[in-house]
Length: 125
Image (cartoon, rainbow, N blue to C red; front, side):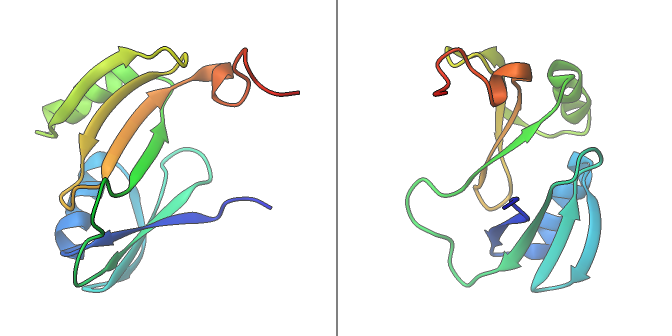
């Protein structure tokens, strides 16, 4: 099996759409005000956003986007007034990550892991 997509909940799909377009994702399905779907500019992954009446309680959703030029991407996004809660930082699990939130409070982690994404030194054989 291959993961097809992730669907994020949103109170305001139009606002979320503007945010993810500003992040650089390509809108491929538009059924406003209830649903949209994006694809990555590179790679084969997609994600969608659907309207909900209330957001999930608790820590919510974490969505990871990988980029080989993480630091440069973060600077580009900051120039577009996108606010990060954590600047790029090397993590003990051998990934470099930057964190931010979308308009609905879904946590976004943009990272670069290279070979360690699927093959960390502690991988089970």
